Amino acid sequence: MSVTLNSSEWNLVYNVFSFGLVSMLACTIYTLVSQSRVLPKYRNALVMSSMVTFIAGYHYWRIFNSFGEASEGMAVNVSGEQGAFNEAYRYVDWLLTVPLLLVEVIAVLALAKEVSRSLITRLVPASAAMIALGYPGEISSDQNTQVLYGVLSTIPFLYILYILFVELGKSLERQPAGVAETVGRLRLLLIATWGVYPIAYIFNIVGDESASSFVAVQVGYTIADVLAKCVFGLTILKIARMKSHAEGMAADH
Amino acid sequence: MSVTLNSSEWNLVYNVFSFGLVSMLACTIYTLVSQSRVLPKYRNALVMSSMVTFIAGYHYWRIFNSFGEASEGMAVNVSGEQGAFNEAYRYVDWLLTVPLLLVEVIAVLALAKEVSRSLITRLVPASAAMIALGYPGEISSDQNTQVLYGVLSTIPFLYILYILFVELGKSLERQPAGVAETVGRLRLLLIATWGVYPIAYIFNIVGDESASSFVAVQVGYTIADVLAKCVFGLTILKIARMKSHAEGMAADH
Image (cartoon, rainbow over all chains, first blue to last red; front, side):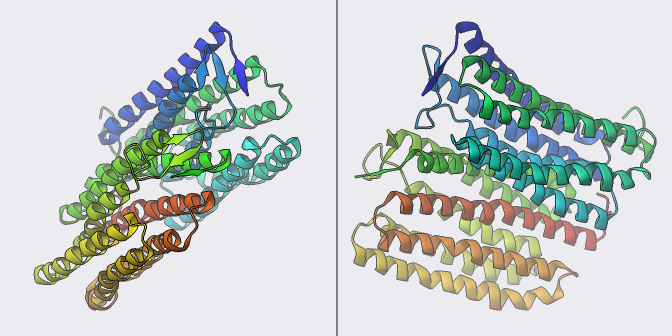
């Protein structure tokens, strides 16, 4: 089983993967080096952001190589056998990075200990369940199985949205000026980018196995990943700096 | 001699190895960057944790490559000859990391110098003996040899448990609040994860050389390694932070 791309499609996917890879690595270095620009209590959130982009960078490196090795004459082997393009790297990536992204948001808010713990102990299992339930649907070629796991994985997703928009909302009132708005934008970024994943998933179910749907899914995933990890991480840095300044760190630091 | 996997088995092992590799690397960076979050006296324990996950990350990179190179059409060469899947990477890894893990536990407790020295000079040779005695059994194909070395390697293992649960227990009473409980959980984590290795070893002796037993052993080893090294290291960081705060480090640092 293979998907044959034309040269502009093949090069687009190849270059988009390379773009994703270097964006993740650059963002990792940026957040690592920016540690000293925020108060110590916010550095853990920043390190988690570095971990997220590092893990994603590793996976884009693997995905990039896998794409090259699985292609012959721009026909991409998607058979799922040894030497095929390995889509599962994305699931391993999300299994690690999605819980980390959520913990990052809680950590940067520096809420009271019990509040943080309660949010984290619900967000982390919910996000792991969301990813783990999506995987059997992704690798299955049976449409009923795909729909079943798509629906199952939506349940923890809705629960995460409930926690972020309802429960977390209550804690935002006590944040310094500007922080609540930025966290609001962070949540919108999260919804907008996470929305790409179920769309790509549905695309896989209803889509013919055409070159253009392969290209759309890969390009869509990559752009969503760069937004959800790099831009997300830079927003975390911005929030950490706003809070550090509100708590007395010199504004020119 | 080879083991032929089906495509979902082959991909599971492949992706689990990649998961192990990136978990070890991310954990290495996390513990390296967190140095400044604990008092200087606890940083040595933390560096040792970084070394453990770095060494394990190196070996998972080798194991991942070895698995790909030893596979042809998803038949894994396990002949033990050049080009075969090299299980011995695990033993080299354990020979280095298991003594380090034990020293790490002692170092983070910051016990009196004589107590530390006495525990370390018994734990390190015992753990090296445990790994070294397991190796001849692992590479042998003779069942009597496998049982003999399995039993021999259990003796230092039991001695290590005795030291950790009886001797170390006496030193835990003088630790700050919460530390004794966390060390207790650390020991349980150690028992639960180290328990996987002898189970996998017995699996090798009694198991047929089937695909499913190969998959179970590789997946089991990897999950045990991630728990015994990454989760273990993060628990060491947690203990170091609890002790640093108990000794006057600012709580928001």
